[in-house]
Amino acid sequence: MNQPVFRAPKGTFDFVPPRGEAILAVRDAMTEPLRHAGYGYIETPSFEETALFARGVGESTDIVTKEMYTFTTRGGDDVTLRPEGTAPVLRAALENGLHRGALPVKLWYSGSYYRYERPQKGRYRHFSQVGAEVLGAEDPAIDAELIVLAMDAYRALGLTGVRVVVNSLGSDESRPAYRAALQEYLRRLDLDEDTAKRVEINPLRVLDDKRPEVQAALAEAPLMSEFLSDSDRAHHDTVRALLSDAGVPFDDDPRLVRGLDYYTRTLFEFVHSGIGAAQSAVGGGGRYDGLSELIGGPRLPGVGWALGADRTLLAMEAEGLTLPGRTGVDVFAVPLGDDAAQRLFGVVTALRREGVRADIAVGGRGLKGAMKAADRSGARIAIVLGERDLAENVAQMKDLESGEQLAIPLGDVISQARDRLASLE
Ligand code: AMP
Image 1 (cartoon, rainbow, N blue to C red):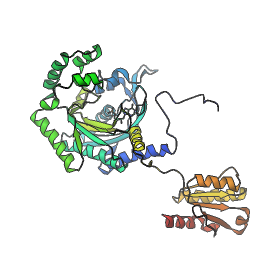
Image 2: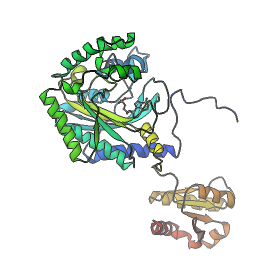
Image 3: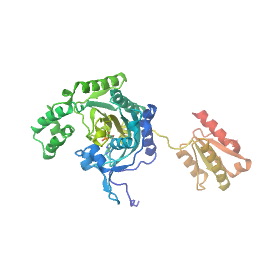
Image 4: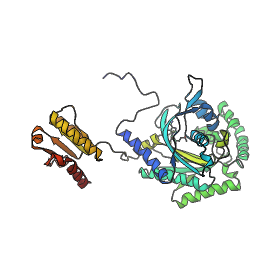
């Protein structure tokens, strides 16, 4: 076979059927609990002014320093394909004045994100997320609500191996003291140049270093939990209590940090062991009470998450779950001859308009080829129309499972097909 001339760019891939339907079903399952809980849909552009991410995500993060698809437009604007959804959604909420209406504002979104990562299983340069953000509420009940809604989505997909890990990063009241203590500890370690630089810019990120020797050196590092102010601790305890009440088990991880700078207080990650060593997170999020001010807005507390659709599908495959999302049809029409084709085209159109999933053999294939196509289509019923049937004004309705066949008046095909399908359900 000839090699195709064009391939999907490195780190990207296509979803083709039936996996195409599966990824759609995954996204639907993730958004369902949100819609059910009164969240409104928001859609923002796939690219933004680069400065939004530089300021919003953090100048020293891997995302901003290494992973952004940034370019200058013909008009000289500096723009970036969105690497994440929170900063754009907050930008849009502020621009559209949503924060001046009734609070909290609860939003959900779904779309493509772009990061120039080193591609591997579960880590791509183009991936999709479903996200949720709640703006204008400091109440820990919102943090817990979001975690519960995500866990409900994973459960609805049949996943049993998703765990949620929680931590508190503290607020402005407690983080500066912790940061200083952590810095003091880290400065005493023998670290490589890059890591030593990170200690000065963003010491918390060092906790996220996956190298075993760094993790070992961190064994005695001070923990945020030892520095939480009373109100930060009360916030975190309420989140944990509400999760317990909701029957959502969670693990505390006092070292959990995430690759974006904007988090305060509640931080959480949804993890699954079936995807690959380097990327166990199927989703994550947290509170970002200072982000609005960071991007030039008023004080506006917020909390949100993003769930990775691609990785969630991988987790489902790892658990051996039947992929969600139906392909195929229920009725397959097989015309034999041009007149029959014309007649059945109308019948299939009417079936589809009536809400019946229907398809038709095309290209004037013989009976054998067309019946093969009928089998492949997943249909339960075939409607076969030959020259003689047409002359007698009947069609053959064939049950593709039992092989049973019945002549029915052509004018009754639609109603009889519907009745038969209903009786098979
Ligand atoms: P983050 O914004 O990094 O917290 O990402 C949220 C979720 O999106 C992660 O938990 C992953 O499931 C997914 N995700 C992030 N980056 C990638 C990537 N490069 N490829 C595939 N999924 C990703």
